[in-house]
Structures are given as structure tokens and as C-alpha cells.
Length: 287
Ligand SMILES: NC(=O)c1ccc[n+]([C@@H]2O[C@H](COP(=O)([O-])OP(=O)(O)OC[C@H]3O[C@@H](n4cnc5c(N)ncnc54)[C@H](OP(=O)(O)O)[C@@H]3O)[C@@H](O)[C@H]2O)c1
Image 1 (cartoon, protein in one colour):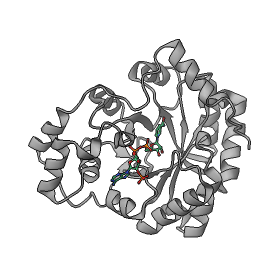
Image 2: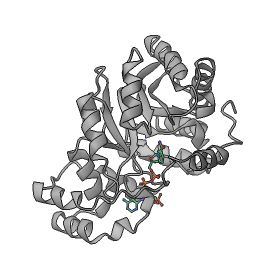
Image 3: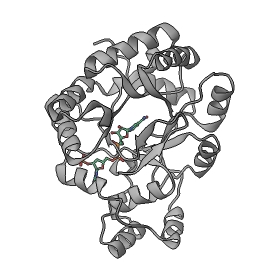
Image 4: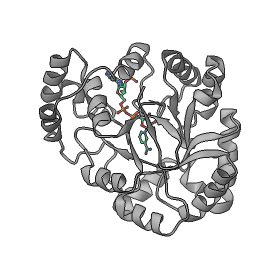
């Protein structure tokens, strides 16, 4: 496993297991348990995924020493204000059965996320959060956020895959020493990504799979990844990416696949963002 030292000195694994949409409790517990047994140490969940309890059960069953684990979870936007961020954080801790979180993240740049950050800074100073993150923050918002807060985020999560490469965002994050983590690194399986001819040809040269080529390409750009799978063989495959290198020519070939294609669609209109809020209107962040 490759690790990156974050801008506050914390070491973070560059590949983790994402558990979005693993809503079946038994399946989620099993996936987390199996992942930890296979050598994963970083698990990415969120209040909005409604599976933190199952993640906690998988962690306890695996028995991995706590100081080896890197557990990330996220504050939902209805809790993005000073008071509710503290309650939301305590609810996540309770559901996960943990007494601190390795990476606590503002899930979306909506609501009073400045107030939420002040609460998170206090929890960080108290040792209950080891690293602070944001998610889906584009560089204009992030520049403002850094300017007007005391503590700069250690991590920003962004949708990043061969069809949405985010080089401008990466350049800015590198200039700020903030780690970019790719969510949906396989474009959630869309756009026929696993049969893409360029990726398939490169995979063949290395005797690797398309998924492994994508994760390697992200690693060589200095980007972390949280691929989701509940299949044991794919978990192993997604972790076996530290024993080969893509050449500069192969990196350049992949860079040509950039097409500004997102898996969730852009939420830059009022209609788009309100529809997104509506999708989660029944979420109970204290359950
Ligand atoms: N912060 C955010 O706003 C946000 C948004 C979306 C996602 N995320 C995070 O990012 C994680 C990953 O994103 P995602 O779940 O959207 O999609 P993804 O990881 O890009 O792709 C997952 C899909 O790829 C398949 N897959 C995984 N490994 C494979 C392999 N080696 N070969 C072939 N197929 C493979 C999975 O199938 P099987 O499961 O059937 O194996 C699943 O259909 C999420 O779980 C979540 O933690 C965050």
C-alpha cells in the first residue's frame, strides 16, 4: 500500500474501499470485513450512505488494530452548521462504534458549511478527528474557504476518472498541499469504461485489468482512490496496483480520454441542486 503524508503529518492510504450504495446491511458488513482481511485499511462511508453501523460491525469482526485503520465518514448537508455538525459527528461515531474518526468530511458545499467547519476544527483540536476533509469543492469555493478559515483541509474528494480528469483542480490542490481523492474512479461502471479500447490495450501490455490501469494512472498523478466493490476477487484486484508502472507515453494516451463527462450530471443550476436535495429529503441523520 502506498501512503501519503497529509499537510498535518497524518499518513493516509492511497486506496480505500468505497461503500456507497451497499445498503444491504449484511452485504456491507461482509464487504468491510473481507476488505480488511485482504489488506485494505481505508474505508470510505458517509452519513448519507446509511450504512455506518454495518461498517462498524465489519470493522469489529475483522479485529484490525485501531491504529492501522483509516476510517472516513461525512457530514450530511442538513447538519452543516455549527451546532448540528457536532451532533452529526457524535451520531456517526456512535453508529460506527468508534471514539475518533481518521478523516471527517463536509460531504457537499451547501448550507452553513463555514459554521460546520468551526465545529469540526474544535473536534480536531480535541483529538476526535485526525484529518479534515471537504468533498465536491471546486477551486473557487475552496480558495474562499481556505482564505476565511483557520485550518486548511487536508483532503478534497472529487469525481475523477479517465473521462473526467480534473487536471485544473489537481494543479490547484497540489499548490495547496491538499490531497485529491477520486470518487467514482471507474466512472461507476458507466460509459462502457471497462471495455475502453485505449485502456484495454494498455492493460494487455502489463498483464493487468482495465480497473488496475485506472487506479495506477490515478496513483501516478498523485490522486487517492476509493473504488467500490462487494466482490472479493475485485477487491483483491483493486489492491494489486503497486507492482507496475505506466510509461509517460501511456499516461499521455490516457490523458486524451478526458471528455468532461460526469456520472452524476452537473448541479450548477437551481433545478439540479434542488432535485438533489429532494433525493435525500427523508434522510434521518440521527437514526
Ligand atoms: N463524495 C461523493 O460525492 C461521492 C459520490 C459518489 C461516490 N463516492 C464514493 O466513491 C466510491 C466509489 O464510487 P462509485 O461507487 O460511484 O463507483 P466506482 O468505484 O467508480 O465503480 C463501482 C462499479 O465498478 C464495479 N467494479 C469495481 N471494481 C471492479 C473491477 N476491478 N472490475 C470490474 N468492475 C469493477 C463495481 O461493481 P461490483 O460492486 O458489482 O463489483 C461497481 O459497479 C463510493 O462507494 C463512495 O465511497 C463519493
